[in-house]
Length: 322
Image (cartoon, rainbow, N blue to C red):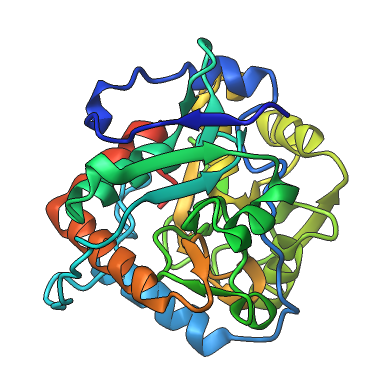
Protein backbone atom coordinates (compact mmCIF):
# COMPACT_ATOMS: atom_id res chain seq x y z
CA UNK A 1 0.00 0.00 0.00
CA UNK A 2 1.29 3.46 -0.84
CA UNK A 3 1.81 5.61 2.21
CA UNK A 4 -0.38 8.69 2.32
CA UNK A 5 0.79 11.74 4.24
CA UNK A 6 -1.32 14.78 4.95
CA UNK A 7 1.30 17.31 5.91
CA UNK A 8 -1.01 19.51 7.93
CA UNK A 9 -4.23 19.18 9.88
CA UNK A 10 -4.68 22.90 10.31
CA UNK A 11 -7.77 23.56 8.05
CA UNK A 12 -11.13 23.31 9.80
CA UNK A 13 -12.86 19.95 9.41
CA UNK A 14 -15.96 21.64 7.94
CA UNK A 15 -13.96 22.34 4.78
CA UNK A 16 -13.69 18.68 3.82
CA UNK A 17 -16.08 17.27 1.24
CA UNK A 18 -18.10 14.33 2.49
CA UNK A 19 -17.99 10.99 0.66
CA UNK A 20 -20.99 9.20 -0.81
CA UNK A 21 -21.46 6.58 1.90
CA UNK A 22 -24.49 5.14 0.09
CA UNK A 23 -22.30 4.25 -2.89
CA UNK A 24 -19.58 2.98 -0.59
CA UNK A 25 -22.02 0.67 1.12
CA UNK A 26 -23.12 -0.85 -2.16
CA UNK A 27 -19.50 -1.78 -2.89
CA UNK A 28 -19.05 -3.29 0.55
CA UNK A 29 -16.67 -0.59 1.77
CA UNK A 30 -18.71 0.75 4.66
CA UNK A 31 -18.35 -0.97 8.00
CA UNK A 32 -15.51 -2.45 10.03
CA UNK A 33 -14.85 -5.38 7.69
CA UNK A 34 -11.17 -5.13 8.50
CA UNK A 35 -11.50 -3.69 11.99
CA UNK A 36 -8.45 -4.86 13.97
CA UNK A 37 -9.87 -4.75 17.48
CA UNK A 38 -9.67 -8.03 19.35
CA UNK A 39 -12.47 -9.19 21.60
CA UNK A 40 -11.67 -10.47 25.06
CA UNK A 41 -13.20 -13.68 26.38
CA UNK A 42 -16.85 -13.08 27.31
CA UNK A 43 -18.14 -13.37 30.86
CA UNK A 44 -21.58 -12.69 32.25
CA UNK A 45 -21.94 -9.03 33.14
CA UNK A 46 -25.67 -8.65 33.62
CA UNK A 47 -25.41 -6.01 36.41
CA UNK A 48 -23.02 -3.90 34.33
CA UNK A 49 -25.17 -4.47 31.24
CA UNK A 50 -28.31 -3.21 32.99
CA UNK A 51 -26.42 -0.30 34.55
CA UNK A 52 -25.21 0.72 31.12
CA UNK A 53 -28.78 0.68 29.82
CA UNK A 54 -29.89 2.92 32.69
CA UNK A 55 -27.04 5.34 32.03
CA UNK A 56 -27.92 5.54 28.37
CA UNK A 57 -31.54 6.16 29.22
CA UNK A 58 -30.52 9.00 31.52
CA UNK A 59 -28.60 10.74 28.73
CA UNK A 60 -31.34 10.29 26.18
CA UNK A 61 -29.93 7.11 24.63
CA UNK A 62 -33.30 5.37 24.70
CA UNK A 63 -35.27 8.02 22.90
CA UNK A 64 -37.30 7.19 19.83
CA UNK A 65 -35.36 5.16 17.25
CA UNK A 66 -35.97 7.72 14.50
CA UNK A 67 -34.20 10.47 16.46
CA UNK A 68 -30.39 10.49 16.09
CA UNK A 69 -28.78 10.18 19.52
CA UNK A 70 -25.22 11.30 20.11
CA UNK A 71 -23.21 9.07 22.47
CA UNK A 72 -22.05 10.82 25.64
CA UNK A 73 -18.89 9.40 27.20
CA UNK A 74 -17.73 12.47 29.13
CA UNK A 75 -19.03 14.24 32.21
CA UNK A 76 -19.50 17.92 31.33
CA UNK A 77 -18.79 18.83 34.97
CA UNK A 78 -15.42 17.10 35.00
CA UNK A 79 -12.47 19.48 34.97
CA UNK A 80 -9.27 18.30 33.30
CA UNK A 81 -6.07 20.37 33.39
CA UNK A 82 -5.09 21.91 30.06
CA UNK A 83 -1.70 20.53 29.02
CA UNK A 84 1.21 22.68 27.91
CA UNK A 85 2.50 21.30 24.62
CA UNK A 86 4.52 24.37 23.63
CA UNK A 87 7.72 22.31 23.60
CA UNK A 88 6.23 19.66 21.31
CA UNK A 89 8.01 19.75 17.95
CA UNK A 90 5.47 17.64 16.06
CA UNK A 91 2.24 15.72 16.59
CA UNK A 92 1.83 13.10 13.90
CA UNK A 93 -1.14 10.74 14.00
CA UNK A 94 -0.78 7.34 12.33
CA UNK A 95 -3.80 5.63 10.79
CA UNK A 96 -4.85 3.36 7.92
CA UNK A 97 -6.98 3.79 4.81
CA UNK A 98 -9.22 0.72 5.07
CA UNK A 99 -11.78 1.48 7.78
CA UNK A 100 -14.48 3.79 6.38
CA UNK A 101 -16.01 6.01 7.53
CA UNK A 102 -13.24 6.42 10.11
CA UNK A 103 -10.32 6.52 7.68
CA UNK A 104 -10.33 6.00 3.91
CA UNK A 105 -9.23 7.55 0.63
CA UNK A 106 -11.94 9.62 -1.04
CA UNK A 107 -12.60 9.77 -4.79
CA UNK A 108 -9.72 12.19 -5.29
CA UNK A 109 -7.28 10.03 -3.33
CA UNK A 110 -7.31 12.29 -0.29
CA UNK A 111 -7.13 10.80 3.19
CA UNK A 112 -10.50 11.42 4.82
CA UNK A 113 -12.79 10.21 7.56
CA UNK A 114 -13.92 10.78 11.09
CA UNK A 115 -10.46 10.01 12.46
CA UNK A 116 -8.89 12.66 10.25
CA UNK A 117 -11.43 15.27 11.33
CA UNK A 118 -11.17 14.19 14.96
CA UNK A 119 -7.37 14.52 14.86
CA UNK A 120 -7.79 18.00 13.41
CA UNK A 121 -10.22 18.98 16.17
CA UNK A 122 -7.85 17.60 18.83
CA UNK A 123 -4.98 19.65 17.45
CA UNK A 124 -7.13 22.77 17.51
CA UNK A 125 -8.08 22.18 21.16
CA UNK A 126 -4.42 21.66 22.09
CA UNK A 127 -3.30 24.78 20.20
CA UNK A 128 -0.83 22.77 18.10
CA UNK A 129 -2.56 22.86 14.70
CA UNK A 130 0.59 24.10 13.00
CA UNK A 131 2.50 21.08 14.27
CA UNK A 132 -0.07 18.42 13.39
CA UNK A 133 0.23 15.80 10.67
CA UNK A 134 -1.44 12.52 9.82
CA UNK A 135 0.05 9.56 7.96
CA UNK A 136 -1.68 6.47 6.60
CA UNK A 137 0.18 3.15 6.66
CA UNK A 138 -0.72 -0.53 6.35
CA UNK A 139 -2.08 -1.85 9.64
CA UNK A 140 0.95 -4.12 10.12
CA UNK A 141 3.32 -1.13 10.04
CA UNK A 142 1.59 1.12 12.57
CA UNK A 143 3.26 -0.22 15.70
CA UNK A 144 6.74 -0.21 14.21
CA UNK A 145 6.30 3.36 13.02
CA UNK A 146 5.17 4.51 16.48
CA UNK A 147 7.99 2.71 18.29
CA UNK A 148 10.61 4.16 15.90
CA UNK A 149 9.32 7.66 16.48
CA UNK A 150 7.84 8.13 13.02
CA UNK A 151 4.64 9.19 14.72
CA UNK A 152 3.40 10.22 18.14
CA UNK A 153 -0.03 8.53 18.23
CA UNK A 154 -2.08 5.82 16.53
CA UNK A 155 -5.72 6.60 15.79
CA UNK A 156 -6.85 3.42 14.06
CA UNK A 157 -8.79 1.23 16.48
CA UNK A 158 -6.15 -0.66 18.47
CA UNK A 159 -7.96 -2.82 20.98
CA UNK A 160 -7.49 -1.85 24.64
CA UNK A 161 -6.55 -5.09 26.41
CA UNK A 162 -4.21 -6.11 29.22
CA UNK A 163 -1.69 -7.15 26.57
CA UNK A 164 -1.80 -3.90 24.58
CA UNK A 165 -1.62 -1.80 27.75
CA UNK A 166 1.90 -3.17 28.25
CA UNK A 167 2.91 -1.61 24.93
CA UNK A 168 0.77 1.54 24.77
CA UNK A 169 -0.75 4.24 26.91
CA UNK A 170 -4.33 4.94 25.82
CA UNK A 171 -6.67 7.87 25.92
CA UNK A 172 -10.15 7.24 27.25
CA UNK A 173 -12.55 5.78 24.66
CA UNK A 174 -14.15 8.29 22.32
CA UNK A 175 -16.47 5.79 20.62
CA UNK A 176 -18.09 2.48 21.53
CA UNK A 177 -20.06 0.12 19.33
CA UNK A 178 -23.39 -0.93 20.85
CA UNK A 179 -25.46 -3.93 19.86
CA UNK A 180 -28.92 -3.09 18.51
CA UNK A 181 -32.13 -4.81 17.51
CA UNK A 182 -33.63 -4.01 14.11
CA UNK A 183 -37.24 -4.84 13.26
CA UNK A 184 -39.78 -3.96 10.61
CA UNK A 185 -41.25 -0.50 10.97
CA UNK A 186 -44.72 -1.97 11.52
CA UNK A 187 -43.59 -4.49 14.13
CA UNK A 188 -40.82 -2.62 15.97
CA UNK A 189 -40.99 -3.02 19.74
CA UNK A 190 -40.06 -0.50 22.41
CA UNK A 191 -38.24 -0.87 25.71
CA UNK A 192 -38.41 -2.81 27.90
CA UNK A 193 -37.82 -5.58 25.36
CA UNK A 194 -36.98 -8.48 27.65
CA UNK A 195 -40.51 -9.85 28.04
CA UNK A 196 -41.77 -8.66 24.66
CA UNK A 197 -39.15 -10.71 22.79
CA UNK A 198 -40.02 -14.05 24.41
CA UNK A 199 -40.58 -16.70 21.78
CA UNK A 200 -39.75 -14.42 18.85
CA UNK A 201 -37.30 -15.48 16.16
CA UNK A 202 -34.32 -13.13 16.05
CA UNK A 203 -31.57 -13.42 13.46
CA UNK A 204 -27.93 -13.12 14.48
CA UNK A 205 -24.59 -13.88 12.84
CA UNK A 206 -23.45 -17.38 13.84
CA UNK A 207 -20.47 -17.56 16.19
CA UNK A 208 -20.39 -13.82 16.79
CA UNK A 209 -20.14 -11.93 20.07
CA UNK A 210 -23.67 -10.73 19.34
CA UNK A 211 -24.93 -14.32 19.28
CA UNK A 212 -23.41 -14.92 22.71
CA UNK A 213 -24.96 -11.70 24.02
CA UNK A 214 -28.36 -12.58 22.62
CA UNK A 215 -28.36 -16.05 24.14
CA UNK A 216 -27.07 -14.84 27.52
CA UNK A 217 -29.30 -11.81 27.97
CA UNK A 218 -32.41 -12.95 26.12
CA UNK A 219 -32.57 -16.72 26.80
CA UNK A 220 -36.27 -16.94 25.86
CA UNK A 221 -35.62 -15.61 22.33
CA UNK A 222 -35.45 -18.11 19.47
CA UNK A 223 -32.03 -17.29 18.04
CA UNK A 224 -31.79 -18.01 14.31
CA UNK A 225 -28.12 -18.07 13.33
CA UNK A 226 -26.90 -17.04 9.89
CA UNK A 227 -23.59 -17.53 8.13
CA UNK A 228 -24.47 -14.69 5.76
CA UNK A 229 -25.54 -11.27 6.96
CA UNK A 230 -27.24 -10.63 3.62
CA UNK A 231 -29.45 -13.73 4.03
CA UNK A 232 -30.41 -12.46 7.46
CA UNK A 233 -31.38 -9.08 6.01
CA UNK A 234 -33.44 -10.75 3.29
CA UNK A 235 -35.35 -12.89 5.79
CA UNK A 236 -36.11 -9.82 7.90
CA UNK A 237 -37.49 -7.95 4.89
CA UNK A 238 -39.85 -10.79 3.94
CA UNK A 239 -40.99 -11.27 7.54
CA UNK A 240 -39.46 -14.71 8.07
CA UNK A 241 -37.89 -13.51 11.31
CA UNK A 242 -39.15 -10.89 13.77
CA UNK A 243 -35.87 -9.00 13.98
CA UNK A 244 -32.11 -9.13 13.94
CA UNK A 245 -29.49 -8.41 16.59
CA UNK A 246 -26.04 -7.14 15.69
CA UNK A 247 -23.53 -4.35 15.45
CA UNK A 248 -25.35 -1.03 15.64
CA UNK A 249 -22.99 0.79 13.30
CA UNK A 250 -23.25 -1.78 10.50
CA UNK A 251 -27.01 -1.97 10.96
CA UNK A 252 -27.25 1.81 10.79
CA UNK A 253 -25.56 1.85 7.40
CA UNK A 254 -27.85 -0.91 6.17
CA UNK A 255 -30.91 1.02 7.30
CA UNK A 256 -29.66 4.12 5.51
CA UNK A 257 -28.84 2.28 2.28
CA UNK A 258 -31.09 1.34 -0.61
CA UNK A 259 -30.82 -2.40 0.11
CA UNK A 260 -33.07 -2.09 3.17
CA UNK A 261 -35.88 -0.64 1.06
CA UNK A 262 -36.84 1.55 4.02
CA UNK A 263 -38.38 -1.54 5.57
CA UNK A 264 -37.07 -1.37 9.07
CA UNK A 265 -35.81 0.62 12.03
CA UNK A 266 -33.94 0.22 15.28
CA UNK A 267 -36.05 -1.29 18.05
CA UNK A 268 -35.30 -0.56 21.69
CA UNK A 269 -32.13 1.07 22.85
CA UNK A 270 -28.38 0.52 22.49
CA UNK A 271 -26.74 -2.32 24.42
CA UNK A 272 -23.17 -1.95 25.65
CA UNK A 273 -21.32 -4.91 27.15
CA UNK A 274 -17.53 -4.37 27.10
CA UNK A 275 -16.63 -7.99 27.79
CA UNK A 276 -18.49 -9.00 24.62
CA UNK A 277 -17.99 -5.99 22.36
CA UNK A 278 -14.77 -4.43 23.65
CA UNK A 279 -14.19 -1.05 25.25
CA UNK A 280 -14.38 0.92 22.02
CA UNK A 281 -11.99 3.21 20.18
CA UNK A 282 -9.13 5.02 21.90
CA UNK A 283 -5.95 6.80 20.83
CA UNK A 284 -2.72 4.89 21.48
CA UNK A 285 0.67 6.44 22.29
CA UNK A 286 3.95 4.89 23.43
CA UNK A 287 3.77 3.43 26.91
CA UNK A 288 6.38 5.87 28.21
CA UNK A 289 4.34 8.91 27.13
CA UNK A 290 1.18 8.86 29.29
CA UNK A 291 1.25 12.67 29.43
CA UNK A 292 0.31 12.79 25.75
CA UNK A 293 -2.60 10.42 26.38
CA UNK A 294 -3.74 12.75 29.16
CA UNK A 295 -3.49 15.67 26.74
CA UNK A 296 -5.77 13.81 24.33
CA UNK A 297 -8.23 13.24 27.19
CA UNK A 298 -8.37 16.98 27.77
CA UNK A 299 -8.99 17.63 24.07
CA UNK A 300 -11.58 14.85 23.71
CA UNK A 301 -13.45 16.13 26.77
CA UNK A 302 -13.50 19.68 25.38
CA UNK A 303 -14.59 18.46 21.95
CA UNK A 304 -17.47 16.56 23.53
CA UNK A 305 -18.62 19.42 25.78
CA UNK A 306 -18.50 21.96 22.96
CA UNK A 307 -20.58 19.75 20.65
CA UNK A 308 -17.82 19.26 18.09
CA UNK A 309 -17.86 15.49 18.45
CA UNK A 310 -21.64 15.46 18.07
CA UNK A 311 -21.28 17.33 14.78
CA UNK A 312 -18.70 14.85 13.51
CA UNK A 313 -20.75 11.85 14.60
CA UNK A 314 -23.91 13.06 12.88
CA UNK A 315 -21.88 14.02 9.79
CA UNK A 316 -20.43 10.56 9.26
CA UNK A 317 -23.27 8.33 10.42
CA UNK A 318 -26.46 8.86 8.37
CA UNK A 319 -28.47 6.77 10.83
CA UNK A 320 -27.14 7.20 14.37
CA UNK A 321 -26.61 3.85 16.09
CA UNK A 322 -27.31 5.10 19.64
